[in-house]
Length: 266
Image 1: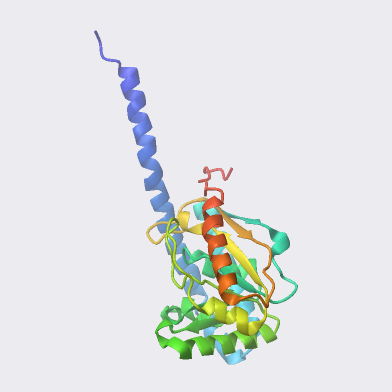
Image 2: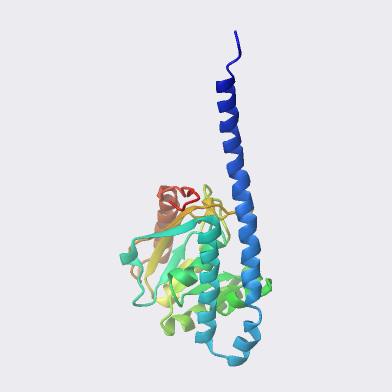
């Protein structure tokens, strides 16, 4: 009996296609990283001009141009899209505290586009990154030293109160660090302190960016960002923190998977 060459060839073709997809995604990811770096480097000449101008509104506009360019590159090279759910809960008409799960650097950049003029609380190590750190620090952000204990917490509250008085919402990642897509982490005490001291409603936000925007590689697909109904101020802080923690941990697992897109973008 002669070997079935047709079946053997088909099997090899399937294995070839399966193996080529990760390699192609890896090439796209590397190309995006190069383009991201080049686009960021192009912003460097603006820094001394913006620093001398001392116009915060102009700096924030430049940050939105920069992050807008980053996500245009992500759409064009990675075929990465963003879908927002619960837009009626977005609370753009007055300040609030956005509480978001932290899976990647994507959300730190994305909120400059999703919620214009938001003030993001992040770790102070970000300011050390050339160009990138300068823009994030002046976007504005509240950069805190997590080893600073009570002094760092008090400084965060003071700065957040000043920003909220200007009509600006505050974004905090209460896990305190990036957490794997299937992992859970207890919230840090900064959320309760903000909620008690600022007297602002909390808007929980869940997303699934960690599936596609990973440390080692970035892939195509659709990131879903879901906004949930605001929690009013004045409730017991520990109770609210536990409620938001449970909500985000449950809802981030319920979000639709980040389905990879085909080359034609469909």
